[in-house]
Image (cartoon, rainbow, N blue to C red):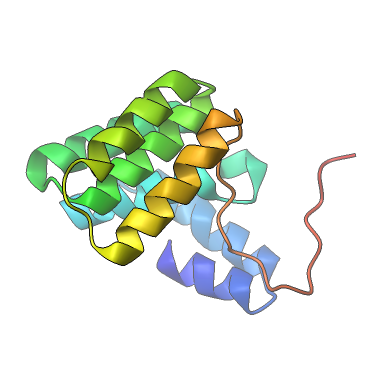
Length: 136
C-alpha cells in the first residue's frame, strides 16, 4: 500500500493501481498492516479500491491490538466512506477526547468538519498537477 501511495504521488497511477490490487488480496497480519490497508480502503482516490465496510472492520481489529489515535481517525474515515456520518463524527470526537498531539488534533478537527458536512475523505495520493477523474 505504501509503495502504491508513492507511485501515485510520483505520477504513476497505473503502477499504484497494480500494487493496490495485489495488496487488497493479502491478509493483513499485524496491526500496522491492518491500519495501512484500512487507510487505503477509506481514503484511496481510485474508487474501485474504496471499501468503507472493509476499512471499518480492519480499523476496529487494529484498535483491539493497539489503540492509537491515528487509527480512530481512520475508523472515522471508514464510517464516512460508508455514509455513516453520525458514527464518523462520534469516532472523531472520541479520538479528540484521548489527548491527541497538536498535529493529530488539527487533522481530526479538519476531518470532523468534513463529516459534519456529510463528506468523506479523499487522501492526498495524487501529485498536485494531476486531475482526479470523477468517472464522467
